[in-house]
Length: 235
Image (cartoon, rainbow, N blue to C red):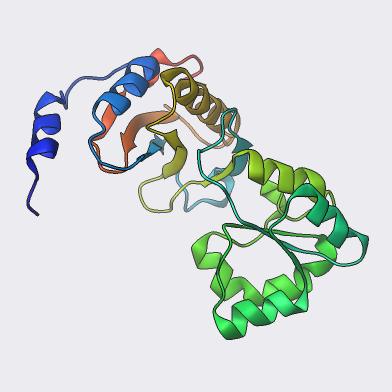
């Protein structure tokens, strides 16, 4: 793939062997951004777990203090009084069987998060083959199957992100903001995610838990972070 002049100039500045503190890396990811659009900033964390083992799964969700910079379209499967509750909370789409039909038969996918009340999971469950591979299937472990739709919708709109360790490589990839964010806001979001991952450490995980951490923008280079510079890195 041909590398543009701007990208080559940035890549030449990157020290691939250097491990930075989280604060330094958050500053550099902005400095190394070169695209003509507001790039997303992602954190990739390789964990010392075996995701193929049931007792070493790492999955959860966290509301980032400064959000992700993206506006999420929220679909809620609900009925009865929960329909109005979801609408009042700011859900973009609320309903039941009609949305099952739109998704299953019409291929409609104009949403980023799906929330469902427990009594609607019989309907939503039939969409598993469509929603599952896209990471959109509601799950009680991350708070998207609940009768408290007000909180679920509010969290989603406020910048709640879900994470799940990949079976290949034991890596967690999460969006923690935009390059337009102030360094301090990126740092707060990244810290919150890492702290949440440390708290989610499975009891069966042995040895070093945070194996490697890299932060990068959509088009920019990966900047490596020293896990040992983080409090709780060996937790």
